[in-house]
Image (tube, rainbow, N blue to C red):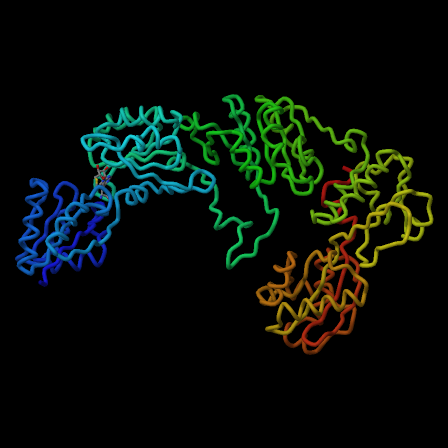
Length: 625
Ligand code: SAH
């Protein structure tokens, strides 16, 4: 017997969504049995000229089966065409059972189900990270009963994404079942009519509004009801796959890469305050309760169902968080999430009208104090700052470290606390070098002293001290409580041969730094001449060490000139006397050259210093504003 029966998924309607395999079988079938109501008749144009075409719509199962069996027994090829994918409501199981009994070979060719065509039409992702990872495909009980344990109301309890087939004629009952099962009335619903057909429609609403909209559109059949938070999400949470803290084969996870600002409001008045903040801060996103979904027009707004859960997600993602709600609610939400002041995001709370603006978490390191101050200009409210140093006008070691190290998390937090305590207790505390006096709040404290050398500080009667130096050796034998800060203030000028590896650059820099007793943590950037801006070794070294690569034009370099004698090789190749020295100095904003050009095998290295004054003044933390 050479006859065979193929159960073919014809896709949702658009003939171009037919698989190549399906098209090929249709093109050689002797008999084609198709579901006339849902299958696009255009695909029949691929059929053989003399093929027998049978519309199954008007026949019962027994009639269809005998048609198919007769053909197969005559060694004919039969294509039994279903809409979408035959495994969903295709009733193929019963047909296959009959054929197997008759020993007739059959095969199933999958197709694009309407559930996926509908998602495509409306650009929906059913499985949004942090929202749901589950899609339920189901139908409401109608003429065909659905087992009680899968009733819509019991499935609704999961609040996953749901695609409901064969139920559009019962939209009101469907909505009732879903709400009875636990979906809130503001849950998004999208009804997709005739997905992928020329007359397709995408009707969007919520459980509260969708039935009326469907009636208005006159949709009674051939539509899917898609339900769930993910289905209506406007600003999706970025997928874990692209998130910077997600490790996979190509990317190495970086810790603590929170970015941007999240503003969370829970009331209508809070929403209006949030809107003001959005208008003033470009990278802010506003998160509102889902019940406002229908009213909100502006971009950069996302919706949540459960405020506590939402705040938990935002806490992991955002660098700065503004919670427009009672501080008690905010505290309850973030309490289980706290790690340390070096890692936690800045959290500011405020009342609905933005009158009292409280720096709640990570005041110094996270910048919540600064943010609270900034917000007062937006809402016209008062800042509430409770970090002792700020209230008493004492310097904050955290702010000093953060400013000088560009936010590198320190590894000696206990020591930092001790020195800060000494300052707050008015013990005598020494600072080296004198430039640190430029920090805001350094002035006017009788027990704070500045020194020109580390030795002077050590000999003094100060019980604690802060030493800021790019020298590597900073472990001083003393009973004083000392913290040593390596500021990010060195620029490394590099001239190099083409094709040099990041490894060789690293070794070269380490050699020079060891020789000169400089700390590698003090490297702020590496600098070179413009044609080197894509030199792979330089770029890789910069990326691997999380520092920037800055390049300068020959013109800029010539204006600075070199300290060491020029090189004829560089003059010919680049048109300048040298690269390493002038680039290091340019990168340091004209700062002092610390290490003159050192020649290594394939590179030259010079080091310059950005003055602390420059760094402090650019940070806005100075006292002379
Ligand atoms: N096997 C098919 C489903 C057949 S049941 C599939 O995989 O898509 C028929 C139901 O499918 C219809 O009541 C409707 O809910 C849905 N449906 C089929 N084609 C559709 C289309 N193009 N657009 C929207 N819904 C469709």
